[in-house]
Amino acid sequence: MTDAITDDARQALLSNGWTLVEGRDAIHKTYVFANFVEAFGFMTRSALWAEKLNHHPEWSNVYKTVDVTLTTHDTGGLSVLDAKLAAKMDALAGA
Image (cartoon, rainbow, N blue to C red; front, side, top):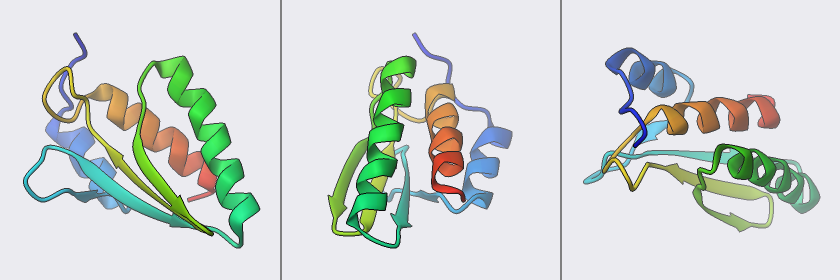
């Protein structure tokens, strides 16, 4: 089982533009790119990391916008995997 996220790690995510999802122990962020190709490229690179971590986002894409929600279903809320994937996605997006 994956370890739950620490309060410090939770605060770090929120200071990097992630927001808490109402009614869930989850975080959300919207990434906006210049065009569809950049958005899809971000999703492709993120998907490779998600596979490496064996941790998959809830996400959607409309044109140049990618909405991402992260939570760990096995732990019933945020875990260290969410923090790792969020940091990797931020880096891939140049955020």
